[in-house]
Length: 343
View 1 (cartoon, helix red, strand yellow):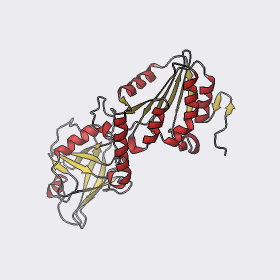
View 2: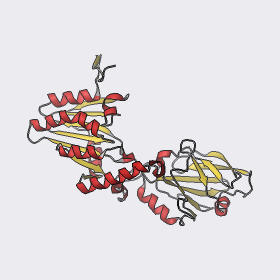
View 3: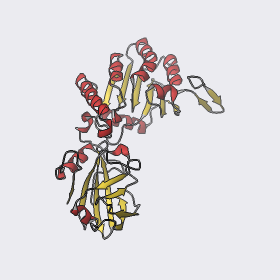
View 4: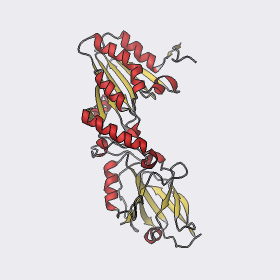
């Protein structure tokens, strides 16, 4: 297979490589004035592949603008790529105020009479542009759909310009994370974590609420990156008598109890068998939990006898709520120990 996906035209379909299609449009569309990139991740090698065509387009006519809205989630975006983009005349914006992971891969080329938008799975990395199995669609329209314009406005509202200070801060934190990746779990740049989002949370990762009475209290439990198993879905409850009492488990090795556990955001109860292991611990598998969610806080609510509800609050998705819950917990009993409390 060649380095670039060959163009294919069949019936009403036209398939072309993501990179090739954008490059061709930049060369041919002399009327275009604005190029906007929305990127989950940008690497230096990815930008260097695209920059030649972008720089040539930008300098061909006065008044043209290139903007890039770039995410920092999972520390994939490279600081050198951000600096190079800015040096090339791109108005780089970092996402700082949002919920979830900033995950779009969108390119928008705007002209007075036509708008071209590429939407796909391609990150602005060399693998995303040339090597991976990716898929993207190129769209043309004479005016911007209201929903797309509204989405773009939301992204702008949640971003801030890349400054030298922000670049240094992100670079330092990313380097620290890279050295300690096994211990830190999901990366969250503090430039985003320090901001309390103005937007509503997404279904499945809501801030803890209590829509119905809690008859048996709440257990707030920190789940750390290294405490993992079964793809990150397994947790281990603290060896503390109040925790055993919360789940109505006798502290007898080998004893077990079946409980009904339901995510708060969907009506999907499931029966789980909780067993006390020889080391007086109880392990619990929660299928909604993923390794990438760690560190996180789980909030269990005792609704009725044998029935429990839980919320999942990852630091990467709900940083403010995550910190608020940790502040409610008692201090860890030792360095590296998990934090928890029952209220």
